[in-house]
Image (cartoon, rainbow, N blue to C red; front, side, top):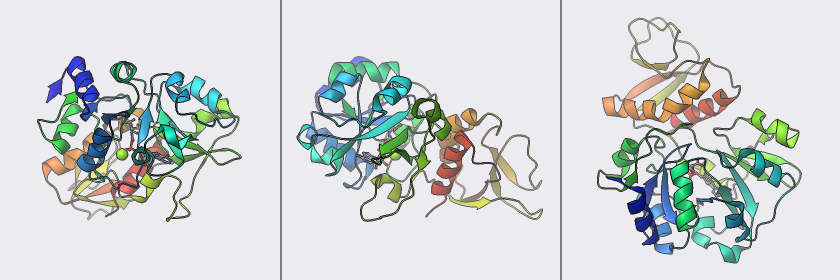
Amino acid sequence: MRISKETALKLLQDGNVVGIPTETVYGLGASLFHLKAIKKVFELKGRPLNNPLIVHIASLEDLTNFKPEYPPGFHSLARAFWPGPLTIVLPIDQTTIPNEVRANLSTIAVRMPNHEAALELIKQSGPLVMPSANLSGRPSATKPEHVEMDFGSDFPVLDGGECRKGLESTILHYTGEAFEIIRQGALPCAAFEKVLGYQPQIAIVKNENKPICPGQLYRHYAPKAKLYLRHSFENDCRGIILGFKGRSYPPQCKVICLGDLNIPESIAEKLYDSLREIDIIGIESAFVDMDFPSTGLLSTIKERLQKASLK
Ligand code: TXA
Ligand code: MG
């Protein structure tokens, strides 16, 4: 159900959960001041309680209230990328944020979205927690229709049209020596070099009992159809291929085009829509053309397709 900004604000202030557009993906927004709404977010998504939520802010003053510890380089990152698709994990004073939001960690993940309507809502309602607005494990939502697909046509969504980026924010965490990427996202590694003076490494999941980014342990972005990743296609291959513009595939295959590899931004924008589309068509399996480089945004796209293929 599409709602106005005024209704969205009222619902949030009354402790309800609302679908909210951001520049990356739609979020399932709840006020940081309403524990009942925060619990409802986990329930609606079917999200494990040990997977913490990102706190969305509209200004650096919002963040000061959580009494964070700022690692070196934090303010340069915030100046360069906020508002925008960057989430930073910070140690905080734990009394300032409910345990449920942090999943009992001593840190929070925080982001200032670059979306006018989202920022306006946060300014008026105070900080919001917002996981991606999809059922746990499913492709994220980049259109209001996607949110309604997962949560029902009566679920309140503020319609912001299609998300500009189409991939979630990049998450950085400070190891004590340098920033590391704990979730690849809409900002590629190279984007940080001019600000930090180095390209942050992509963290490797080491300790499954105590992961740095709990969400990385779970299945993600997956359609119901089984995806088979391929680097080449034999001529006798049959079925459906998720492929790219300008490539030739075996003629008997039906190709769903993910976009033009020369314009990764356009692939990113439509990726989750394409993954949802194959379930709407109702196919049971598809091949994915993985024969492309892991450069820039394509690295995030590759990672999403890899995760989407896991069962
Ligand atoms: O672009 C985005 O980041 C979107 C939009 C709505 O802002 N949000 C989003 O939230 O992707 P979600 O919940 O789908 O993914 C958040 C990820 C999860 O993998 C979670 O484990 C991780 O952030 N996370 C949250 N708090 C954390 C913390 N304190 N330390 C490490 N990872 C954290
Ligand atoms: Mg998510």
